[in-house]
Length: 210
Length: 210
DNA sequence: AATGATTGGATAGTGAAAATATCCAAGGAG
DNA sequence: CTCCTTGGATATTTTCACTATCCAATCATT
Image (cartoon, rainbow over all chains, first blue to last red; front, side):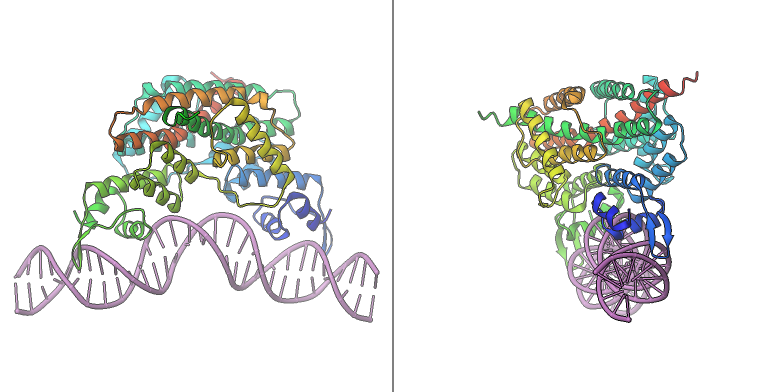
């Protein structure tokens, strides 16, 4: 298959595919002549994954690059999850000692410890949590850890559910995809449903029409 | 208070504040002379909100502008929620008929209808859900609506919980903030906890150390 | 009152990210 | 043989969110 066909089937333009190749997201096709290269189904599959990660996951090209690189290195599943989560960010630059941020980070870490969750101390999600705590504190709405119980419960349930979807005996390619789906795409689904449920709850409470 | 003091207290630079004023995120101070303007605590508060929405909510400046405009117009709470959710996006351009997308959108709408949720037909969250469905379908992992039950349950519980936080008799400013916190910041917290729980579940399952 | 720093407001410039466009020589198709 | 397409390299564009500069007016300080 040539690049124009790849473009047609993936829904991307030829230029964009070339750009992805240059950026290391997609391997080159096998060159058959100075102006001919052959692509196969794996290229197409990869492109579809790239597109999904870019458009749904809203990941920068550099992050997608790191993820597909980990895929190609056949990293263990758990490491791959780490790579994906690292790619999802955030990536706080090592900032000077901001007391707000430090306190928030301590609170986030304390929560994780108290829950007994086994999470890398470098997990970006810790920073995401801490940044949110810090922002809320600055807004005069400090978070009461006890008030997070419903969120913790929901997160735990869903994560448990998702982990159960990855069966150890399915082929690796499939397991990897299952994991990515669980991490990136179910997160979006949860967000969307959360927003929809909020609108519904708000409608029932504040606009008692019908 | 002058702009340099505002900058110091908000943690933003003078230039950035000027930029926000130009962009309509922040009202001008009251001009007291050709080179003097006076800002007050409300400016500071507003700036902190802007910063939180930009940094934690990752909202583009234009979206923040729409939100604060709705705040200033004293829109009813439910309408404000709509504005915020609209600002959160996504904003799909009216695309040609893509069968994938259409099917996904139909599936998303069907789910909302089946749940009996009262949600505007223009709610961007519908598109977010539909786009995710479409992406999963293209990856060969179509979503089984029945499999979403745990997500629906979690979303409903949390939204109900959050709606309960907004008491009708608190001053409007506070209620508005409560609503924003519920919409933007609790969403981030949920995402962060979800990721942390995933890592924990993965660690227990795939790296049975300790 | 002189003088140097600061301010408000306007305008122009920067840097990163992600494409998108152009160019060129070489192949292939009719 | 001629024209169209392609692969690959290089250059340009667009958007976003700031930053930097400029200028005259004004404040603070001598």
